[in-house]
Amino acid sequence: MFLVSNFISAGATLIGYVLTLYMWLIIIRALLSWVNPDPYNPIVQILNRLTEPALYAVRRRMPDIGGLDLSPIIILVVIMFLQNFLVRSLYDIANLMR
Figure (tube, one colour):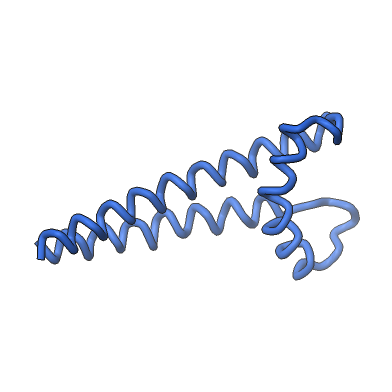
């Protein structure tokens, strides 16, 4: 049973790292939007490809707030919720199985 427990714990750790990385990508994307970077820069293109699907999904469901884009904030709140609920729950399940 400890193998399943270790697998769940490792999965929780991996999910936590991925969520943290995506959170930083969203923050960097939001900061870059203030300075209007070169759209042909490869780093900017990769950043846009990684973050635009989530940002677009949130923008599509939100009402227009006069040009103010709150989608990065919404995504950051969702990521923090997943880190506090999903990752912690997986760690708790792994500990209960030991």
